[in-house]
Image (tube, rainbow, N blue to C red; front, side, top):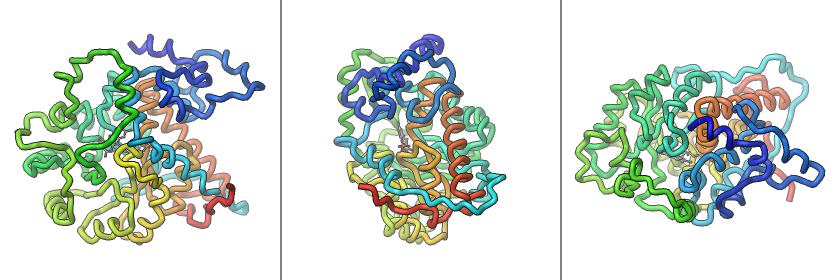
Length: 411
Ligand SMILES: Cc1cc2nc3c(=O)[nH]c(=O)nc-3n(C[C@H](O)[C@H](O)[C@H](O)COP(=O)(O)O)c2cc1C
C-alpha cells in the first residue's frame, strides 16, 4: 500500500496541483501557479522520501494526491465558505518581524519547560481525530514521530487508536484531549482512563457544538464513490460510538460528543475530577480566558479548531493578544491554527504564546509518508524557527518578545 502511495507522489503533483475537487484546489500549495520561467520545474524527479519535501505546504498537495476525496475533504474542511481556515493562516502575514542585529546568535536554544517537563521545541502536535483516514498506521505513526522528535503529542479522544498503544508507541504519556459527551459518567470514565495511562494533562475542547456546517467535506463525500463499510459501519459517522476511547462504556445516554451546555459550573465539576493539569482548548476572547483561569484551569489554548466549527472570520492569531493580556502570565497560553512556517511560530510566541500547535500539517505528513512524513513536517518547522530566531537576534524563546513583531502596513 505504501509503495503504491509513494509512486503516486510526485513533484509534478506538488507543482502542478493535480486536484480532485475544484473547491479544494483554491487553497492548495503556493507553488500551484508557476510563472512561465519556472515551468521546467514541473518535469522534476518524483518525490520518494519525506526529506525531499521543501516546506509544509508541499505536504498538503501530496496528501491531496494520496488520499481519497472524502478523507482529504475531512482534513481540509472548514465551516461554511472555509474563510476562517484561510484567515487563520493569512493572519500571520499581517505581522512583520523586527530583527535585531547586535546580538550573539551563535547558539540558538528552542527549549522550554511546560508544567515542569522540558521540551526541545515549542511546537506540539495538536489533537487530530480519526487518523486511520490518513494512513494505516494512524496515531501510532504520529506517536512514533512525536517520540523520535521529542515533541509533545495531544491525542484526540475520538482518535482511531486507543490511548494505551499510543502511549506505548510514544514511549511516554501523551496529553489527552477530551470531548466530554453529554453523559457525566462517560466523562468520568474517560478522564480516569487517561489518568491511569499516565496522561499529565486533560484538554477540554470547548469550541464544538452538536452540529457544524462542513460544506467542503460534504462536497468531497459526494464525489467519493467508494463504499467503506469496514470503517463506517452502517455508513455511520458517529465518532463516539466507533472511538476506542469510549469502547466498553455504556453510551445509551450519549446524544453528542459536544454538549451545548459547557458553563463555568461544568468547569468546576471537571476541575474537581481532574487530578493533573486541566487546559481548555478553543478560547478566543479575553473574557473567557479570564473566566477559565478564575475557575482553576492550568492552561488556555487559543484556537478556533482550525476554522472547522464556525465561520467567525476571526483568525486565532488575532485572538491571541487579548487572551494573553487577560491571562497576564498566570498560566501558559498555547495557540494553534494556520501555523505553516517557522516564522508563524515565531510571531505567535512574540504575541504571547508559550507553545504552538499544528493540526492539518501533521496529517498531511502522515498521509504522504506515514511516520517519516510527520517527522519531516516537524523538522521543517523547527529548522525554520531556528533560522528566524537567528536572523531576528533572539537566541532563546524567552528573548522573543512583542518588540520583535509589528503590525504590517502593507495594503
Ligand atoms: C482532521 C482534523 C481533526 C481534528 N480533530 C480534533 C479533535 O478531535 N479534537 C480537537 O480538540 N481538535 C481537533 N482538531 C483541531 C486541531 O486540534 C487544531 O485545533 C487545528 O487543526 C489547528 O489548525 P490547523 O489545522 O490550521 O493547524 C482537528 C483538526 C483536524 C484538521
